[in-house]
Every structure is written in structure tokens, then in C-alpha cells.
Image 1 (cartoon, one colour):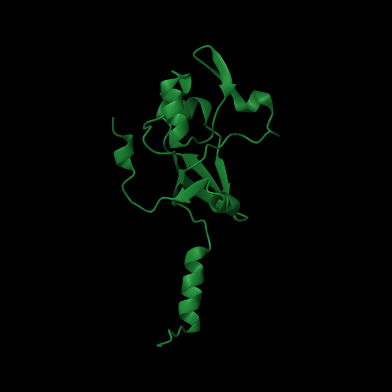
Image 2 (cartoon, one colour):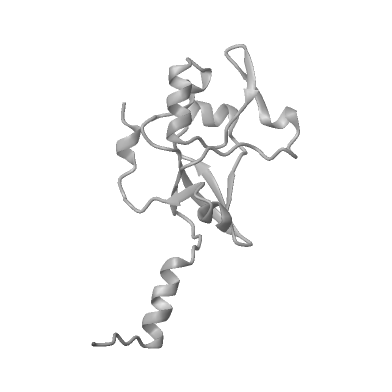
Length: 145
């Protein structure tokens, strides 16, 4: 029986690939919808759109988008694409947290309702399957109508 041998550098390289990290410009896809923290005041997290008041999602997954469409929710107007979860782009990294903007929102919606909102990601959100890093380069194909 032949034994595989690893040197220290190979082991370190293997470990590096499993440890999450954040850097500016990374793209993450939303697998589970993200809403404002319960500690956020109702006035800050709720919006009124088309005469309906609701808590705005910071990022929605594909399943939620299909529900919005099926139920004729006003939220169906918010997104450029409903075939994938929202794409979040890391704008800045601070204290092991990534501050992201939601690229999947229509520009006028982002400007009106999300202008100063960041989706804040931490490593637990990756471990818990809330988001995953999107490594393919061409996300623009999901924004064409």
C-alpha cells in the first residue's frame, strides 16, 4: 500500500481553501433571504410601496423571488432577475465582516429604498448556508431582460 505524503505547505494550502475570507469585489449569492435585524426600528426597516407597507428584504433567495411573483407581491418589481438568489458585492471589509451592496436590485429601487443600506456578512453566514461565494465571472447574464 502506497502512502500519500504531504508537506507542510500543501497542508496549509489545503486549509486555506476551506477557511472563508472576505475581500473587496467578491460576489456572494444569497441562498436564504436576509432581513434587517429585529433590533432595527420599524421605521428604518419598513417601507411603503404601491400602497402596501412591509419589511424590505436586504437580500432575497430564488425561492422567495418565485413566491413574490406567484403571489403578485409588490416585491416582484424590485429585482432584475428571479432565476437566482441576489448577488451581493463586497464593498468594504472591517473586523471579519463584509459590507455588501445588492447588485440584483433595480437601480431606481436601490436608489429609493436601499441607498444607505449594506448587507453585512460574517463567516457564520457562509457556514450556515445563507450565502455562498459566486466564483463565475459572468453575473451580468442574470440581469438581461
